[in-house]
Amino acid sequence: MNKAFFNWSGGKDSALCLLHVLTGKNWDIRFLFTTLNGENKRISMHGVPEILLEKQAESINLPLKKLYLPHKTTMKTYNLKMKSILSQTKSEGITHAIFGDIFLEDIRQYREQQLSRAGLKAAFPLWGQKTKSVAQTFIDKGFKAIVVSADSRWLDQSFVGRIYNKQFINDLPRGVDPCGENGEFHTFVFDGPVFSKPIPVNPGKIIYQEYPHPKQNHPGSCLGFWFCDLN
Image 1 (cartoon, rainbow, N blue to C red):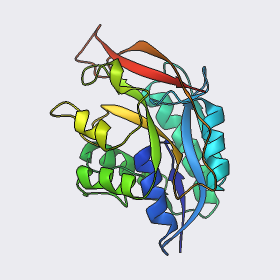
Image 2 (tube, helix red, strand yellow; image 1 turned 120 degrees about the vertical axis):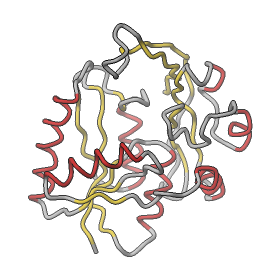
Image 3 (cartoon, rainbow, N blue to C red; image 1 turned 90 degrees about the vertical axis):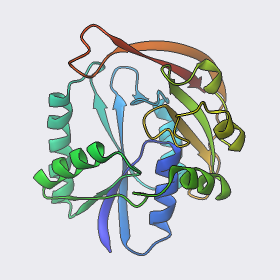
Image 4 (cartoon, rainbow, N blue to C red; image 1 turned 45 degrees about the vertical axis):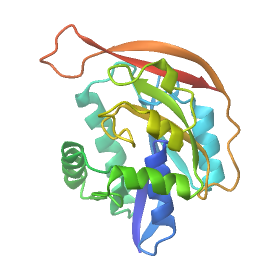
């Protein structure tokens, strides 16, 4: 079996991918790995509190390693911190990193390049599957998730705080991927076959936040996101 660490976002694609890995015979998962905002102690892009992430890991019964990033981090800072993590990981005899990505080729290439420099390999168990099928499988397997964030370019605030189910998928506007693979929305999984017990969670207030556009050819522009606070 290949020793690996699992990149865990706390969301639905991660959960389905982890189920696939844990029920197979090819992988020995040594720990879950998650990046968080070091200022507010929340999962990057998802906005989920650290305590709920820890409850997920406890219910999954796998060790959890966390990387805290500055609130306004740069790719240079991120790459330096990841280089240190990957170097330590390789020294522990781990050979692979597993991701739940489905079809974003540029993201895959970036991950593979960063891992290769550290002498590690990347694995993408869900790669190339139709996202409609992935969404249906997630629901059919008995997973339960709540939508915790949404890109305001695609979705309004009425979509956050909802349970991710067939009705939610049917209500998505034309052009929005059913798995949110383009970053349209993110989820928090609170129950399902990878957990020994459900994660108690309640949707709280909905807030709106803006962030500087990550691409340099959009100077001065911002991206807006809706978040549902969980407690």
